[in-house]
Amino acid sequence: MAFRTKKQYILSKGLDEYFKGVHSAWKFTGLFFKEVFKRPFHLREVINQSFEIGLKSLPLISLTGFIVGIVFTKQSRPSLEDFGATSWLPSLIGIAIVKALGPLVTALICAGKVGSGIGAELGSMKVTEQIDAMEVSAINPYKYLVVTRVLATTITIPVLALYCSFVALYGSYLNVHAEETSSMIAFYQSAFKTISFLDIFTSVTKSIVFGFTIGIVGTYKGFNATQGTRGVGRAANQAVVLAMFLIFIEEVLIVQVANWFRFF
Amino acid sequence: MKELHNIIHREETVISITGLHKSFGDLEVLRGVDFNLFRGENVAVLGKSGTGKSVLIKIIVGLLTRDQGEVIVLGQHIDQLVGKELDTLRLRIGFSFQSSALYDSMNVHQNLAFPLIMNRKTMSKAEIDFAVDEVLDSVGLANKNKQMPSDLSGGQRKRIGIARTLILKPEIMLYDEPTSGLDPITSAEIIDLINEVQERYNTSSVIITHDLTCAKNTANRIAMLHKGRFLKVGTFDEVFGSENEQVQGFFNYNFIR
Ligand SMILES: Nc1ncnc2c1ncn2[C@@H]1O[C@H](COP(=O)(O)OP(=O)(O)OP(=O)(O)O)[C@@H](O)[C@H]1O
Ligand SMILES: [Mg+2]
Image 1 (tube, each protein chain N blue to C red):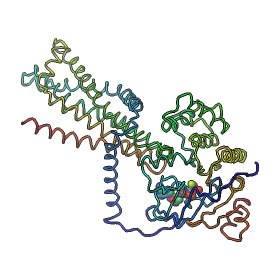
Image 2 (image 1 turned 120 degrees about the vertical axis):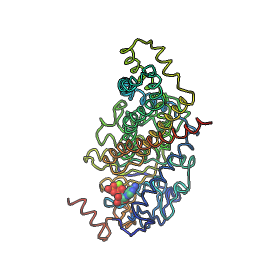
Image 3 (image 1 turned 180 degrees about the vertical axis):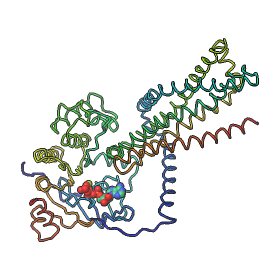
C-alpha cells in the first residue's frame, strides 16, 4: 500500500492547480509549432481528418448559413424601409455575413461538433491507454494525433466559413428576390461592393485562428482526460465550452486590431 | 503446461533498478525498489492491487518518470533519453497493457500493422501483411484479421495486445497482468503463449500478475512488491517457503479462497 505525506502549496491548492493548468496548456500549444515542421508529416492522416471534419459539419453549416441569411435579411428590411434605403440591403447583408456572421457561426458550430468530437475521441484513447500504447511503440502521439487534427481544423474551418458565407448570401438573395426582382449576379455584386480586400483578409485570418483554437482546445482536453469514462465526457464538454469562450475573445481582439489597420 | 527451459545469462543484466522512488502528489507509491533482470530470464512481480506494479513497469519504458534512483534498461538510463534515442530503446522493449489498449478505431490487422508502418519505413506492404499474419498465427488467432477490437473477447484482446508488441521483435517483454479477468483455460493458453514467446524470440520478461499459477509456470524468479519495496525475491519455492507473514498471506489468499 502507498503512503501519504503532506505537501506544501505555493498559493493554495486551487490557485496552484489553475496556474499549472495554464502553463501546461501553453506548453501544449508551443509544442505544436515545434513539431509541425518536423518529419514525419502524416499527410494522409491530415487529409483524412480534414475530410472527416468537413463532411461531418457540412449539412449543419449549410442549413444554419441558409437560415441566417434569410432571417437576417427579413429582419433588416423594415428598418431600412423606414429610411427608404432598401437598395442598401445587399451591401449591409454582405458586410454582416462576410465580416462577422460567416466565420463566427461556422466556428461556433464546429466548436460544438468537431471540438467535442476530438475531445471525446482523444479522451477515450487517453483513458484506455491507447495513447500510451503509441508512445511505447515509438510513435509520437502528439505528432500523429494532435498535429494532424489541429492542421485539419485550421485548414478546413476557413473553407467552411467561406462556404457558409456564400450559402447565407444565397439565402439572403432568395429573400430579396421574393420581394423585388433582382438578378443573382447583381445581388452578389452589390453585396461585395463595400467589402474590401482587408475585410476578406481579416475574415479568413479570423477563421484560421478559430480553427486552430478548436483543434488545440479539443486535443488538449482529450490528451489530459483523467478518471475513466467520466473524464471522456468531461473532456468533450470542456472542449466545447473553452473553445467557444476563446472564440469570442479572439473575435473581439481581431476586429479591434483590424480596425487599427483601417486608419493607415 | 510444460517445464521452463530458458537459458539465463547471469553475466548480462538487461534491467537494473536501484533505489527507485516514485510519488504522485502526496501519495508515495515506490519507496526504494532494487531489481535486476538477467538476459533470458522471466521474473514475475506479485503484489496487492495498488502497490505500484504497473507504475514500476511504466517507469521502465519511460511512460512515467522516476523521482529518485537509477533505472538502467539495456545499458541506458531511460530517463536521460529523448527523441530518437528513446524511440530506438523503446523498440527493443515490448509492453503489453493491463487493459490491452488496442486502437479501437482500427481492425486487428491495422492494429498490428500500425507499429510496422510507423517504424519500419523500408518494409513493403506485402512484407507487413506477411509479418502480421505470422504474428497472428503465433498467438493462435490466424483468422481474426478483419475483426474490430470491440468484437473480440477479453482473452483474444490480450493476445492481440501481446501480438502487437511481438511484431517489433523486442528483447524485453513487460506483461501487465496478462491473465487477469480470464477463465483458467484461457489463462493457461496465455501462460503457454508467454513461454512460447520466450523460447521463440529469446526475450527477457517481467510478468506482473496476481495469479500464482501464472507466476509459477512462467517465471524463473518471483518478486513480491509490498509497501513500495521488494519484500522477497527468489524462486517460487524460496519465496513461498519463507515464513514471512505477508508472503504467506498472499499465498493462502490465492489458494484457500
Ligand atoms: N498517473 C497517475 N497519477 C496519479 N496516481 C497514479 C497514477 N498512476 C498510478 N497512480 C497511483 O499509484 C498507485 C499504484 O498504481 P498501480 O497502477 O501501479 O497499481 P498496481 O499495483 O498496478 O495495481 P493493480 O494490481 O490493481 O493493477 C495507485 O494508488 C494509483 O492510484
Ligand atoms: Mg496494474
